[in-house]
Amino acid sequence: MSALQSSGHLTIGSSQIEYRMVGPAPDVAPTLVLLHEGLGSAGLWGDFPDKLAAATGTGVFAYSRSGYGASTPATLPRSIDYMHREALDVLPQVLDAVGFRRGLLIGHSDGASIAAIYAGGVQDHRIRGLCLIAPHFVVEDISVASIAKIKIDYEQGDLKQRLARWHSDVDNAFYGWNNAWLDPAFRAWDISESLAYVRVPIAIVQGADDHYGTLRQIAIAEEECYCPVDAEIIPGAGHSPQREAPEVTLKVVSDFVNRILRVHGEGELGRAA
Image (tube, rainbow, N blue to C red; front, side):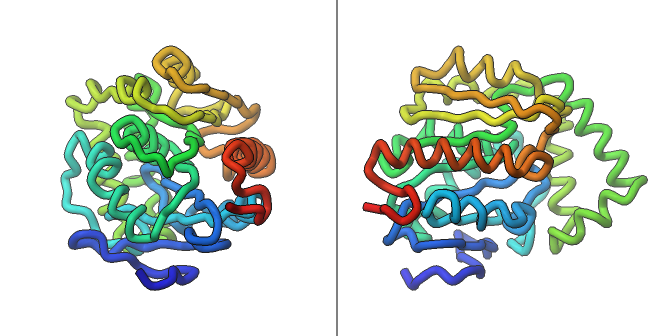
């Protein structure tokens, strides 16, 4: 493949996928792949990728899934298993398209769930570890209640206007995610079984004031995983610690990345294999 530019689009199936690449290329250093939340995009990570690259010496690759950012809109309604499809059908193609050789998956919310499904369903030796920010492994009452509330904010408040900055088709982004989570059938969604098949270390970062999930998610990971699980609860942060407590979150994530890559003799500010 041709060298990755700092930003652009990848052709994945019939979709054009927006991406942003920071730091060294995948053939030079390990790569951290960022998987955004249910209303996120490559751009909504802000300067977190840049700071993460600086703190670890790795490349950082962020992309917008179909329906988000400047990527091709998704076909709606999304199926209940949309995160499995993203993890098992789309993500492998993205990793191959960028020439991913080794590194970690770093996911937020839906993106964290997608990372866990991938690591549990695909025994990919290139993946050294997972960092899961506000992950969902099961559906909780608090999740559904908050997602129902945000629909009101979107339709009656200014949320749509604020999200339109990040998505070329904001209705496609919002309703693709919101309608799937509010479908009564989604209450049975449960990916905890995937955790038993993860064979790399996991770090979980959870805001103490997260209104979309509780510490039950961490307990499930600790119960189901056979791999090491480190959990960090960040006081004063809600569902997006990387935006609400950026310095603390950056340190937790970069320390984990550096520790994992050091075991493999990689990373650590350019000391790549």
